[in-house]
Image 1 (cartoon, rainbow, N blue to C red):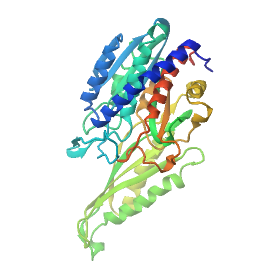
Image 2 (cartoon, rainbow, N blue to C red; image 1 turned 180 degrees about the vertical axis):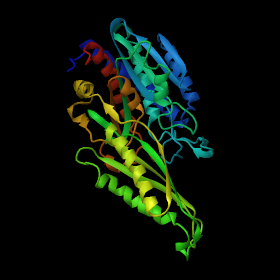
Image 3 (tube, one colour; image 1 turned 60 degrees about the horizontal axis):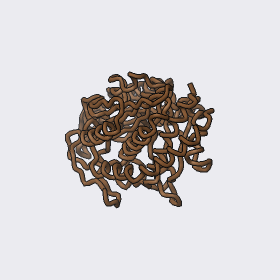
Image 4 (spheres, rainbow, N blue to C red; image 1 turned 60 degrees about the vertical axis):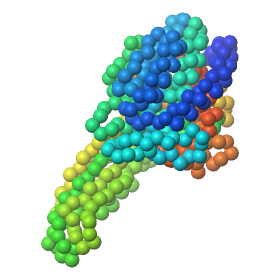
Length: 420
């Protein structure tokens, strides 16, 4: 377990974080009013890079994975290299939240005009890490090691035909030169009240794989179905068959999983049986072995049921993010830090969530821990609050100061007494 950091340094961290809070809130509100979608975070990354350069950091790299920024702070004393990550992209969501800095931005996504909004809180993450960078830069002589600040684009997904995100940042050496020993990240979340830090050792967030199934039959008159092959009936049976994959074929006591068909399209008239139906869905797991098993079962179920209906099924799998797995040793090491920052009542061991995160790619390279920061006002039922990705998503901004304090304390505590 980590020993408390030197008292004077803790006091300087706390005082410095409190002094920075107005600046962090101003950054967040500016980013919120000017959201940018994945791989398009040009304005955001320029503001970030200019700020990091103004701090006199040892290296500031730009255009990493298109619009990412990576900066390095070398402390005054030797020690490990700790990486911190924040994602910068917004979502194609039209904002409905009643705040004075609400987004009015219109932009393009996948060929369509859309609204843009920081409906998941990445504006908060970017502002928090900018604050942490300024806080630690001011304490450089007391820093025992190196800190890497990773500002990542395109966590919410990539425009069609493009690459990017955490995977590309790793390929472009975001964790190297010097090599990071561990990485920490956080995410604001509406399902926790402000003042709360959520943690979980091991699998915390699900893998995020998607699929499409094209069921092909033979078009005919709806009054004479025997003259054709009905892909709508075949699709209905496939959908029902999918429901048994988890409920009857997976050990849900060991690991939960979800298979969802979220879209189905077929036919144009009530009296015409169409040639084909297209379905789209997602499956989520918390175990990499189960992930591959379920992938095969989905394909087998669709093709075999279609065959039984004299139709065919073309299954196309799109692999998403891996399971977000918090390194157990590192997560348990961090508990004293979490308690110091939020108090015993402010630290919550949380259940797994079906959402996904490409922070998982970093965790496949080095030990990593990811935390949730509550941003629903105290006294409100967090489970009834508009969720992340909602157009009504609302942030109690006191969560930003908690995020700054958490990441800063994790850095100095790890460098004082590493878990590895």
